[in-house]
Length: 153
Ligand code: FES
Ligand code: FES
Image (cartoon, rainbow, N blue to C red; front, side):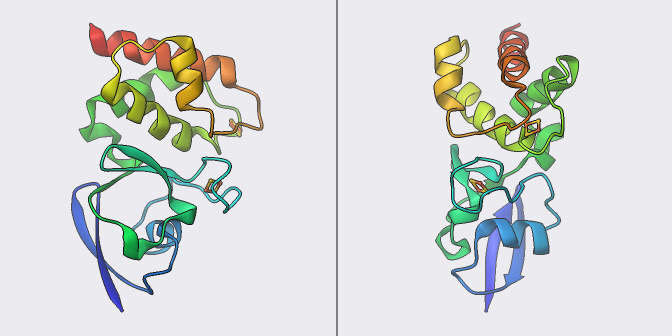
């Protein structure tokens, strides 16, 4: 059946079943490559997108349950917070393989959208479900703090 979803402000029609994971539809039908398949079980955060302001694991979210716009990293040029995060992650070189980074940035965006000047512990808590095998956590933390600072300027 055809299921309509809004991705980064654009309506798209996807031919699939309502039980299909949102991640599959994003990657296979909507030209979205930032969200990654890591664990497929909601445990690593690499597939994180934002729906209605909340970071959501798209690998365990059925497309039929999606109500509202899905924001992904592809929208960074139109989003002040994502733009600041993108710039800061590059400046801090906060990636090695980069597999986890889009998910990290989406969780960070959800935090910075509601908290202007988060403490280290608030950032750690917000990103607790995002895993990085390469161990760039300190740089990621620095990048998020730097983006927060820029957004306040
Ligand atoms: Fe979705 Fe790991 S792939 S949480
Ligand atoms: Fe490689 Fe995070 S940079 S998993």
